[in-house]
Every structure is written in structure tokens, then in C-alpha cells.
Length: 547
Image (cartoon, rainbow, N blue to C red):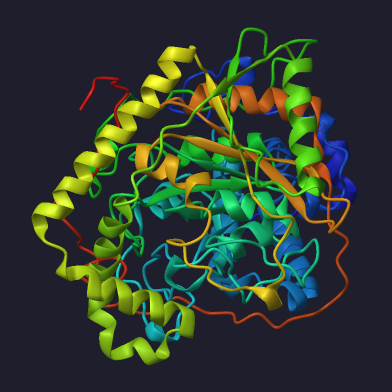
């Protein structure tokens, strides 16, 4: 077993090592795809390192994966009592993975993500470990296999810390069992609320979530972290408990754009178990960008579309943050153009509910085990299965028409990016949550990206002076435009690194349930539930043709 390096030796060792530029497909990476030099890292607490900072120290062997894991588990145990982001941890398996990662790192040619701890939203299957979607209805369920996303991370040498809470079955936008680290009386957003809260609290440098109607972007905005909702089909959904098969996206979450971009480089790609991943251009061979170009006006010539109604519902306390973000874009050379977003067809919700109901009909005898608000939503979804098939396919045609209209908006205004607020409220208190279903509320602010399948990055833009809760901004593009969006977001964060702000946590120790790997469930699906879904998937397009 490799001997862990102490923190006293870390900075001295960092000054010696040089980080390899390999890691993505074994090719030499361009300067913007390389990790920063180890000597640039000034943080001395491993738990407070960003994913990029931790990766550069791991690669230079200035930091041992066990030391990093120790710090993350220790911080989680010390502070998660008030946040409760973790539903389970897997320390025995994690330490074994950390030791294997150390052996790979010792060769000097390990993937850039090797040794990084990660938390998975409790909808991603890992063989032999519990998978419950934060619901009593799946108590005792053991995954039969690995999700496509976890296979990729495991093969890259990442260290699974545990599963993170989701709003039950990813149905809602609140994750009410989790506290926001910036104010635990507030919601962290949802449904990937546990993932966002764990990142903000510095329990883990990496996490992943899902997005069906804002479930990556809402918690990213509320917790002051970054999330990337990739193009539909860019990342696998195999082995993931579904909400609606034709609108579910899996995506990376990190403290910064660079952190999320590093994860996306390993998360994206073809998975034979998810045919949607075979559509579209190849993932960049050397991965996605990790650093900004910099300079006085790095966004010169970039055109940002701002919908005329985008700010109408914003409270003044976060409206000023959105305005400041627009000023930052202009200062960096970007051009803001007034646009009118196409209207999301209201009837599409009927098709969403039908897909939702198809999955949950297998649990109709367990509905009393659901949280009351989830049971109401699932019951309505199962009842919606009476929708005629012809109507369902008519709705899918409406969705295609909407996507083409979205693409035409980009073409007519020569846009590179479209802007939307990351939230329409200044935080939401956990004791005042009402209808939190992903199928209710501010659909226009989020559904545009799920119906078009277009990529979106949600980045922090500061914190409200009224509540102290963070606020983010969505940057959307055309399908398959992840690389360009990441490059743009990197410039914005380089100029205004508010992502480095860290919440002040009060010690609240918690004995987090620690589970060992056991015999996998019988399957046949990795989730050990019936998640087969329809025999087709949505296919994103950049076409502008009238439908």
C-alpha cells in the first residue's frame, strides 16, 4: 500500500512535480486543457480544494488520495448534521479505491480525474450498493449493476464517497430533507439538492445530478456552485432511475466551471446501453477546456441573447445581481441582444406526465410510502396513462417544432449564448415550501432547455444582500455547443471568481450511515427496477426548418 503524504510535505512536493498534459485519450492536451501548476495551489486543507486544485496535487503526487478522502469524510462527519446532504457513505470501498488510484498515479500516466472523490445523486446505480431515490418506497433496494456514468468515472480512477440526497424520485425542486449550507433554513433547490449542498459545504470536490426541468440548474443557483446540463444524449442515462425518459439529462456539478468541465470530459461519450449517446459529434479527444484565455475583452464578438421577459419576475435583491452579471459581459466585450424566446407548447406537459406515470405504475401498491406531495404527483401521473397514443405522438411533434423555433432564434440574431436567471426567487425557506413538483411552477425558465435538448451552464453570480443565498445565471447554447459555452463561462469566472466564496458552517457532527458492498440485486436493469421505458429517444437537432 502506498504511504500517504502528509500535508506538511505537500507544498514542498508540489514545487517539484510537473503535471502531465496527458489524460484524455492519451494525447497531449492544449494549454487550456491542462491542469494548473501545483505551485499555484495555496489552500492547505485538502477538503477545501477545488477539483482542479486537488487533481493537480494528485497528479504531481504532492497529495495522496487517502489524505484527500480523509479530509472530505472528516469534514462531512463534522458538519453534515445541519445539512444532511449524504444519504449514505461507502468508506470501506472508498479507501480501497483511493489506494488503487494511488497506484495508477504513481505511474505518471493516470487520467486527470484519478483519485478525486465524488458523490452520486441517489438515482445512479452502483452494483451491490443501495439505490433508493431518497424514498421509503425503495427501502432495501440494491442495484443490480452500474450506471453508464459511474462506469466511466470508475474507469477513470475516481473514488466514490457515497450517494447524495435527491428530492424523492427526482420529482420536485426542493429536496426538503437537505439544508442549504448558506442558510440551513433555506432549500438547496432540487431535485439534485444533496449534490449541490455537498459541493457548497466542501464535503466533496465532485458530484453529479440529473435535470428534467431544472434539477441541475435550480440547486446550482441556490447553492452557489456550477452545473452543466449537457446536450441530450451527450451523457448516458443508462442505470439511472428515470423521471421522463425523453427529457432526463445527466450532468456534472462542481464548485467552478473548470471543475464541472473536467468531470464532463470523463462523463460524456458513447454508451451502448443508451442509444441517444451515439448521436451527435464526438466528445473532444483532449477533453473540454479547463482555463480561461483571459485579457481585457476575451468575450469580444460573442453575442448573448436576453429574452425580453427574463427579468420581469426577479425580486430586486437578485435583480441587481443579474444586472451586474450583464455589466460583466459587456465589460469583457460581449454584446447583449434583445430576443423573444419561443413559447413552450403547454400541451407537452401531458406527455411528460405519461412518461412519469409509466415508470411509477410499478409502485402503485407502495404509494403510501411516498412523501405526501410525491404521492399526489405520482398518482396524477399514473392516471395520465389514459392519454391516447396519437395525442402523445402529436405532442412529440410539437416539441420538435419548438426546438426548430429555438434554433431559428439563434440564427436570426446570430447568437452564441442565450441568458436566463438561475432562479426567479431570492431563496425559498424550507418551512414555506408549497407545490415543489418539477412539473409545476416556473416551467418557462427551465423547460426550454429540456425540450430542445440544448446545453446549459448555470454559474454563480453572487449572493443576495437580503437573504445571503446565492443566485446564478443560465448560459444556454445550441445542441452540441458545450465546448463554446464552457469557454465563455470560464472567461466570466476568471473575471469574477465568486465561486470561491465558502459558507461558514457551524459544527454539527453526524454519524452518516456507512454501508458496505453486498450482493447485487437480481436486475435485469442496473437500477433493480423496471426502467425500460419507451423504445425510442428524443434526438436533438440544429435544424431551423419549419415543421
